[in-house]
Amino acid sequence: MPLIVITGIPSSGKSRRTLELKEFFEKVHRKKVEIIHEMDAIVKAGYTKNTFYADSRKEKGIRSDLKSEVQRRLNPNDLLILDGSNYIKGYRYEIYCMSKLYKTPQCTIHCDLPIEHAWMLNEEQPETQQYSREIFDALVTRYEIPDSRNRWDSPLFAVMPEDELKFQEIYNSLYNVKAPKPNMSTQCAPLSSTNYLYELDKITQEVVSAMLTAKTMGIETNIKIPGYGLTVNCSGTGPQLTRLRRQFLTYSKMQQTEQSQIAPLFVQYLNKSL
View 1 (tube, helix red, strand yellow):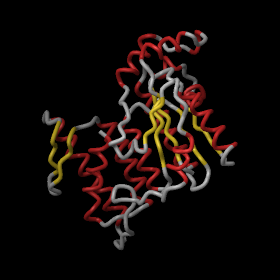
View 2: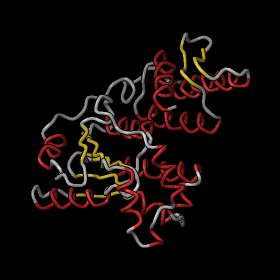
View 3: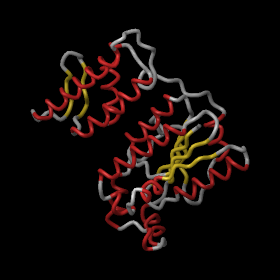
View 4: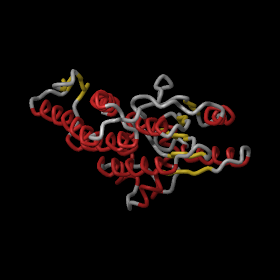
């Protein structure tokens, strides 16, 4: 299903815009609309918003679950809305790659709101549903504003509280366009070699090992990968690299590529994600 990614700082009206979109697509265009709410996943996991955003490990776990849910529900006809903070551009890029993999159009809705206005709206919420000032300020600081020049944020629709959503333009961006063409990072030609999985595992592990070795030597940027003539822009932690390698393996097993392209594609994926 075509995908709308909702993003914005805390209390910027994301869920309100989600409901407006749902009403429009259902009533005007008779589309089935499914919504994945980040807050529902947080509550289901037993967290409050303040305890959740204070722990990066909890955030990573929920983000992974949400991404899996998006992957499971994507199809060519119905509409899927991902309602959440989605404040990390690398995470939005991963969602974008998934959309391209499944050949489904995507757009981004940025709920743009002045910080103090958002804080005022937060204070109007019941006390149990408010962000603490510390968590609110931390999320504002972390927020990576979407940019229409980035293909993973485009087409981008920014909306202020007083604005009406450009409903028909959003519809056209999802249903009156051709499905996105897969590229080398999201879909590849079938591989003739019978030992593809072995080579995929071996090559990606070599890249990760080279990065971890460089890190122990104090090299944090422009890490050269011996034997491949490739460079990773910056290092990551062991758990980060393990997670990204696992995600890349999942994508690559579904859409095989030539053995010579495994390392370049993996390095490209790391450079976009780290």
